[in-house]
Length: 492
Image 1 (cartoon, one colour):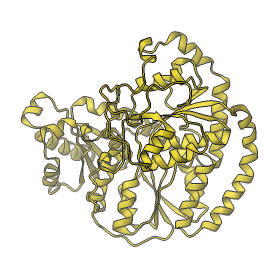
Image 2 (image 1 turned 30 degrees about the horizontal axis):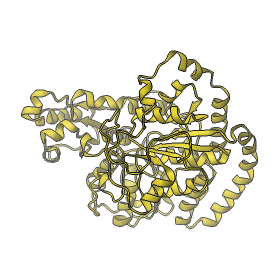
Image 3 (image 1 turned 90 degrees about the vertical axis):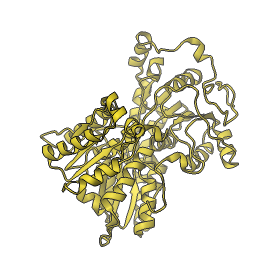
Image 4 (image 1 turned 90 degrees about the horizontal axis):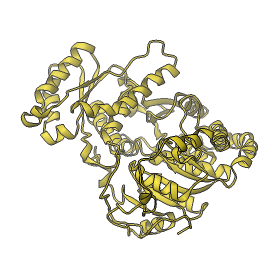
């Protein structure tokens, strides 16, 4: 990229991925620039950036995906592949396709002798079997350690192939911040697909960057809202195509549904192609939906129309929230999710009068600081766990804080018997104004019907000793960046 961004999020100023403490202390220390880069002496479960690179592109039409790695590395793609198949069904596709994935299956001999031969064979196989328009080659820890020059290999093979070969450098050890995988994918798109080509501008065309976790119903709702502004949506890269990717440079503005998904890429498009972008929040909840929609409208010169629409939606939705709020008022909630979605859920619960007592997010940076400062103005001092997964910390905190409801992936916390749910849904819109009502009723329904989780707590044990629950949840973070001590149920 023209700004020479490396694709490693740790290189961005004031970005942290290992931290824990109370929200007021963390926000104050961040403002003073007192936080220090920390690390964990013990780590349990860590999402590799390679899965994000793969999942960002895996649904592209006319494409093949070569994972230059041992067989096990490609196992992480199963979830994204399943999501791709489900997404096709929701879009009315009759003949469901699986993504075209080839693994070079590096072994111990390749680690010694190099994996160039297998990579060349994989590219040849992709061309022979599928005749694609694009072939993406994803690196791995193994290929990075070996030192295979993937750029040179693909560059050499490009001479004899019509398919565009695109190497993506997503070696798992390059970054602990899994969102770096998104950046690696977009850096490759910028370098090899867009390749400084400038297409004529199309007034009203909006680049809408969306990750795989956005459902088809959410896509339709967001496209409908932007359509009210007279915008045409270029929905990318999920369920996209090479032609749609190349249209990126002809857009009038850009935006993303998740603010960590394409933020660096949108900055690049602004610098290199003069495409301004809206980088705000995920449109979940009243405040966030207002803010997200209005920011895009202002860039399109449609601020007045957007405000009129927002007012109509408030008149329609807010009276209906009263019943949901009665059911959830005062409930204490712990939230865990990706950086964008966790903070979106934290803003959402304010619509229902709920109290935030804990928040887990993979990354803490200037965007997180803005969200934390907003939340600190609403909620009492709550616990913040900055962790890429690390379920052992999550269960310690949830057991100690004992929230009334857990919002996030429920596999671990559900075993405490507390109600659990999430703000994802593949079949219904969770974004926009109607999504607020749906999520409110969904959360309330779980709170009122916790029977399954109560039975789960009896028959499904967590693999931790009682001594761990009595320990400081953040004892394995090297530097006590937030100076918190042991997290207790009393506000720190």
